Image 1 (cartoon, rainbow, N blue to C red):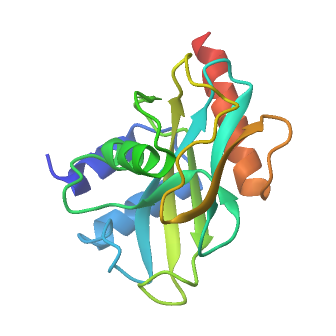
Image 2 (image 1 turned 90 degrees about the vertical axis):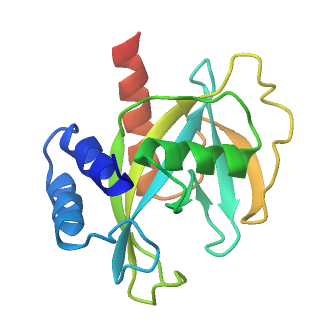
Length: 181
């Protein structure tokens, strides 16, 4: 299965919503809709990392945007699945190993990205996954900081910096883990 076909199948498996339909329509109209060169919009994949006890989230201070975000970015030619792209980004940008990625996305978000290579009017159509950190991860330790970040830090779940998009993602993560309990 191609990455494009996997993305269509992944999105189709999600509950119906206006954003899901927007993302699917984009993929139908753009065979290259997962490529960073597809403009003005393209699909991206990201991962919110939650501590094993669900009390903290790991976020990155994005170097270009200078804001705290979940880990994520563009799909690469070697990516075979959308979930694989999301996990790859989380592993590369956090330095953590053995993250347990939940198989289905938990949230979708469309946002403007004026610094993207596809141009100043670019929108990322972000498919957001959830990963749980291993129980033995030391939350007080300093995680690895990638070249794409200025900082990487654990935040208490009730004291997270960022905008309403991060809050909505955290709410979706907590709802997901509460349904699994």
